[in-house]
Length: 74
Image (cartoon, rainbow, N blue to C red; front, side, top):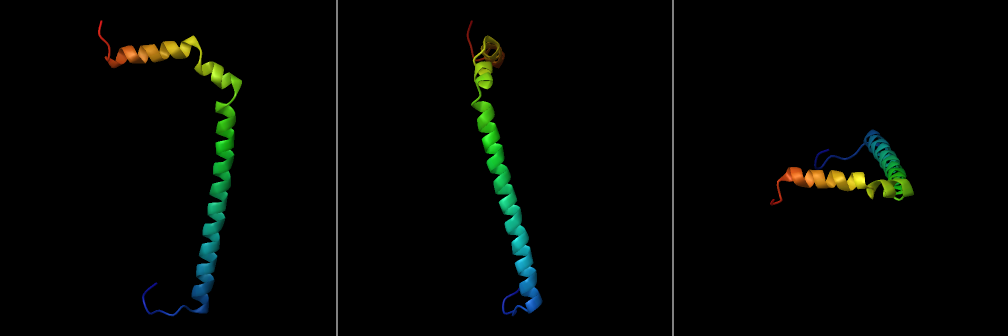
């Protein structure tokens, strides 16, 4: 595109086609994002996920990482 150029019928068709493809892609990405968000919410809200986060193993791993960080005094 350049300033002062008048669009031909073919130019308009090309732009409409490209904009339509863009819109279709955006709809697809938006729908996919909604599905992923719902899936992640289902996983993180599940009882098994919440129990897994609260287990002593998780706490032990956090303690291990804290000790490895060197941010403590003996």
